[in-house]
Each structure stands twice: as C-alpha cells, then as structure tokens.
Length: 95
Image (cartoon, rainbow, N blue to C red; front, side, top):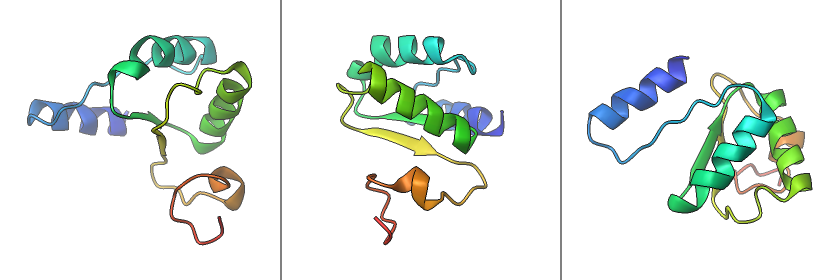
C-alpha cells in the first residue's frame, strides 16, 4: 500500500506515471499487463518478492511477457537473492 501511495504522489507531482493495482490474482495481473503494457515504455511490478517471482515465471511460461522488453520489479525493503535476479539486468555482480 505504501508503494502505491508513493506512486500516486509522484503522479500528482506531474511525473508521467500510471498506477494499476490489479491485486494478487495472476490472471488479473496478466490481463492488465497484456492490455496496457504495450502502451508504455516500461512496466514495473511491485510486491512481495516470492509472489513476484511466481508471477514472472508463470507469465513467461504463458508468453505474457514476451512483448514487454522492459519489465522491471520493485521489492520494497528487500534485498533480492541470487535466484530472483538470475538473468536480469539488475546490476548484481552475481549475474
């Protein structure tokens, strides 16, 4: 909730940002990403790290993220482990 409020604040300040909160149902998340993702320069998924990993892995398996070259994740108060960052461009020297 804190992250969503921060994003709304930034949007009110004039930053080009659209916030969508589809909840924790993967089908709804995929529907939003497929419907809106192509209209933006990047898509950022924010949430609980193990759940985000599950969403991204399921999305890859279903082909949802193939047309989104700039998909990013935001982990609030969390240091990602090697298994979450493997293959990403996170700048982690372990990649």
